[in-house]
Length: 309
Image 1 (cartoon, rainbow, N blue to C red):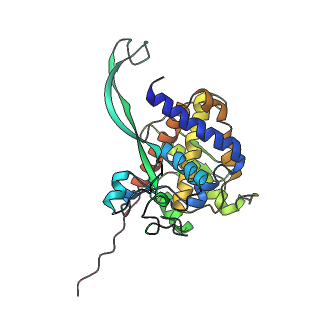
Image 2: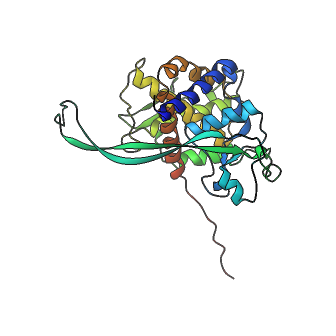
C-alpha cells in the first residue's frame, strides 16, 4: 500500500473504533466543543478546519481530553511566540489541493464517445502535523471559551437559510429535497416534536439544514450525484453527506446543546462500509465541507455605515 493509503486507513480505523466505543455518543464532542479552529486563521471569516480534519480533531480532542479547541502547526505556534511542550506528539491532518487532469471516457454514453477526452478534478493529498494548544506554552492564551465560536441565535439561523434563496415549502408530513424541481419540502415547524436528546426547535433546524445540504447538490451548485434511489449506494452516500453537513452547520450555528442520537446512529450504520472502503468517509466529509462552504459563501455581510455629521 502507498503511504497515503496507509495513513488514510489508520485514520478511518481510529474513527471506526470511536464509533463502536461511543455508540450514539459519538457526536457528543462535536457539539460540546464547537468547530476545531485553525491557529493560523484565527480572526478571519473562515477559522475552522473542515472535511475529514473535522472528524480527526474532534476525535483527538475527546480521546486526549484536551480543553482547548485551537490547533496549529509547529510553525504557526512559533509565529505566535509559543513552543510545543517537550515530549508532545502531533496528530496528522490532511491538506487537499484540487487540480485539473485530462481523462478519457471508458465507454460510449448518450452524449460522449469512448476515447473522447475531458477535464476532471483530482486532488493532491499531503499530511501534516498539528498540535492542540494544551500541548504548548500557549495553553493559557488560547484557553477554551464557554461560548461556541460563531454561535448564532435562532433568528440568525433563519437569516442564514434565507440568504441562500433556496425555495422552501411547508406542509405535508415529510421533509425532503426534490432535485428535478429544486425545492425543499418541510413539515410545518409547529408539527415538530421533542425527542429524548433534542427539543422540537433543535429537531426542526437540524432537519432543515440536512435538506439544505441536499439542496447544494443540484447541478447548478456543487453538482453531486442526486440520481440515486432509496436503498442504493448513491442514495445512501448522499444521505451521509447531508448528515455530516447538517451536523457541521448545527455546530457552527450553535443550534444543538446535545447531539442527536439519530445522527450518530446513522453515521454508525456506515461502519461496515468504511471498513471496506476508507475513502467513503473521506469523500463524504469533503463533499459535506464543500456544501457548507457553498452555503457560507451565500451569506450577506451587512456593514453599517455611519453618516457623517
